[in-house]
Image (cartoon, rainbow, N blue to C red; front, side, top):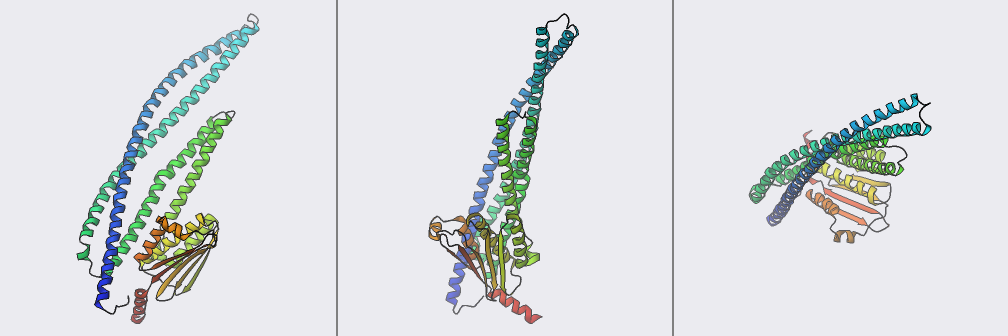
Length: 401
């Protein structure tokens, strides 16, 4: 970083850094407190769901017991009806035609009733297995939620303690860099945790629902068109939800930034993104190609990821331009589209959390974020991050070699 000309400027700069760090810690504390409230709500909801499912299980067991008894009774009646039909058929020269018809229709009706009872029994037993699995899953989530509540409480106490001592413990700018790296690493760890939980929870449940819907649809008679159509609609919704969950998991997937570097990671991400979404990304690199601080690379990657996702979802186009330029002193990142655009003042008045999050992330690295957009004229996001320290490090490495 460049040295200021007077100690007064140094004091002002140090004070601003302390204020920024205090704000970051306050945001972390607020996030942890909000997370604890959300986890507690999840725990409470899971407990309520378990109670509801256990009540349904008791009712289901009662129905299964009754239907088994009904099946046994119907089975005996059906057996007697078949024997009667055989007896009537054997003495057809004595029995009247009406007697034979009544015996035949009675046996046939009892056979159909027995088949329907058995289908109901099979469905109820299948539903019981599903409820048992759901109860186990909710109990497992409860245990995880309790562990997370304990962990977040410890983290909250640690961060609050660090906040109280912040003004006395920060002596050098390097501490600020350590905090930034810790924040980025924490965000990445949270993304991995969310992706893992999506895979183990909602994705598995949605897949299970689709399988069981297929089974029920095969069990239903074909003439019940209305029921079959409704089940088909539910199945379509479940398939779409499963696709959305897997898409979220894909976007949350961590990349090996420390092994590949920013340029290779972006290129690999764009290749996968184009294949997955049929979306064209024109990626251009100017100036030097080198690796930067890990926190900066991860932060820029996530900014690109969020911006590209916004273009695909909101700009109503299927292509974008991404330009990365390293002039030695400044790293400039541009994400541009020729989509529908938006009214920037209107968005800023609504205090868009996505926009505020991007601005805050850029500020953490001492950079600037500029957004140029007008309705029907596309959008351009320009990010500039100073690289004086990176340049000095590169020169020192060159001299040492």
